[in-house]
Image (cartoon, rainbow, N blue to C red; front, side, top):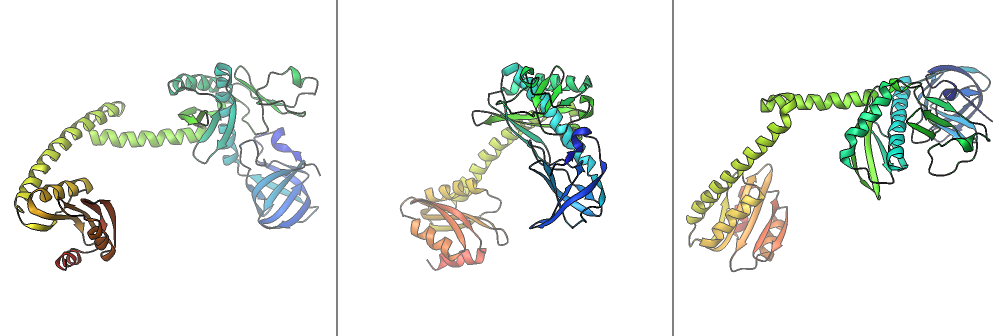
Amino acid sequence: METKKLYYVNSHLSQFSGRVLCCQPCDRGFEVILDQTAFYPEGGGQAADTGTLGTVRVLDVRERGGAIVHLCDGPVTVGQTLEGTIDYNLRFDRMQQHSGEHIVSGLINRRWGFHNTGFHMGTESTTIDFDGVIPAEALPELERLANEAVWQDLEVHCSVPAPEVLPTIPYRSKRALPWPVRIVEIPGYDICACCGTHVARTGEIGIIKLLSVIPFRGGVRMEMACGNRALGILNRAYDQNRQVSQAFSAQWQETGEAARKMNELLSQYKFRITALERQIFAATAAGYTGAGDVVHFEDGLDNVAVRELADAIAQVCGGTAAVFSGSDDAGYAFCLVSRTDDLRQLGKDLTRSLNGRGGGKPDCQQGRLQSTREAIAAFFARK
């Protein structure tokens, strides 16, 4: 049961008529086969089209032995002719991504000889895996060349060459393929075996934006976006940069330098704050000189500061310093420090009694409690 593939005749076709050849119930709904269809089935890294057949919704599309199987949310009548409508905006978006991927993969293959070993078209961006290392500093030039292909508005040729012609075509493929082979050519940039749908001319891609390249399985994984997706990403990035420029009172094209200066200033402030904090800790500790065991609460300290204060108190108190910082609602960070005692059992008793977690060395136990100040004070009063 062969289905005529209208998406290869015209990839921009969004509406068509097809006669129902088969309708069978399945676990997910109903499997429908038509004599012809514009619905593209999942394959080649490209997701299946969705849309409607008559009054039912097409949820997924697969190819099975030459037949295109539409997974629908309701039954249709065998023999009737249905009007099919694909979700064209989604189809066109995928054509932009897929055609843009061909240009980038073709450029990389021609320059470095690397092959595309993986292709995934996500909802936000597209990732391509290559079997060689592409340096990150090469991305700007690669992106410029890819967009030159877009600006030239080249015709995209899709064909199935005759068996005797196929061996003469230098198409990009990781392995030899048996005939029939569908060839997609972007003149001067790529010739590749591909079963996906593509734009008619490269100008329809709009823009190609290379986002990142990272090491992956001995090669690299590249992230990119084309067309409306790329525009959306760039608009969001510009909006974030606009907010940064307002926050730093800097021109939008100077936010990087403004951020660097702010980081330097924050580092200076942090150094000064740390020095002042240690002076305050020393003064606080001095008040506990010779006091023995100490339970101290201090607001606004992070885990590092809690430990530093506990350590400062332990140096002078002659007993165990127990420092807590937090609130009854959010819980308390704690640190126990002693110059003489093994605190492991005390730490276990504390966390077990007051709904906490922690651990550390014999002379220092640190963690967090989900308890109240009153309960913490009561725990140490019993010790």
